[in-house]
Length: 161
Length: 306
Image 1 (cartoon, chains in turn purple, green):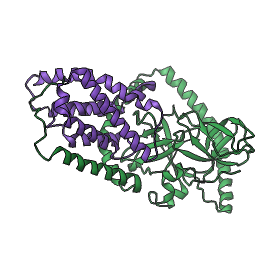
Image 2: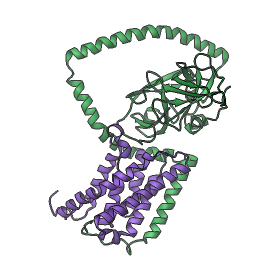
Image 3: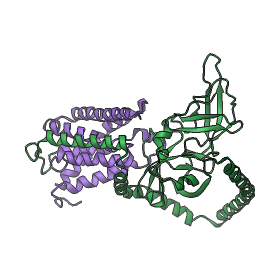
Image 4: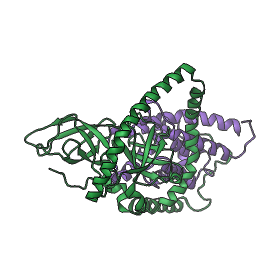
């Protein structure tokens, strides 16, 4: 994408979200799918921080709903969890943006843990809880992915601005 | 540090307050979840929204289809011939078996008519292909490429060439989701083929293992016994192979024996599965009968047979 071609990040947001949705159902070899990072959630956090006007709560909610449709047993479960994460991100947006990267990663880790816990809790309510500790793997892998994602998307954003 | 892009002014102070929209959307999500879980009110809405997800499945599936097409078109002649010979041989064997089957089937039908049994015999089948997508790593669910358009309904039994695979839990327009018999929320009513003892085979979350928790220590089961579906749930037709017993452990101080079985169907390998419409199902309105509710079948409600 040529520099200066796109003013609004809307297209970039849409593009990354579509890729993340594909990534969410892409078959991974072997047991790797247990640790599949929540790429879409990371993107929601990232865009909520860097383009909050485009990526509002409604945006996050619809992303969650898409995940529900693609893989959830229950409609609205991931939507609610995405909403909570987006709300907290927006709430602490100004602070989170100036955090040094390790501090930011830690915050993202906590958001992800909260997200996974909310999913776990709703699963429990509807009586379909997955209780293996492997369930928490994506929190770890997603956290590790965060610094790289920020690095890549920041570079891209700076180019296309 | 996240860069400020051109319009990174916070949304606070613009539009509805953050807390208000959060509250509103949270209420909407909770309403959705309750409606979806409690009453299955959203089946139709889900089916239509599911259509929007179809392009994603197509995109993910495309490379696999392309690879299949490629290997298919460039397979060499000798390989095709060998395959052809093997298939002809298999077909011959199957034909002979089918001859026997025909007469047995007829006899069975007559006997059933005498008993006025309610379990129907499979009437119509359709081959569906498992789509290469990961639904959820912790649940044994898979997606197939047939949906409501092809007449698939919720609670429909699904088989492969070796036995029962599972049942349909969710139907979209062009795809459907299956729960495998090895999912730990699935229970299949079974019967020991040798002596007709009825029990329930519960999934364990391991594709190679089912457990039968309701067999007493005195129950006459032994390793290598074949378990077939008993048809008592009104979902799976009676008499299809489900699993083979692998382990029986009897501890006299316990009430129930520890019995494990290995599913007959190739749950982790099968690419093609068979959707089944039985005779009784055709008469009943598919989506309104309580029998087709998989929730009912997934709970082991039936008392253990001792």
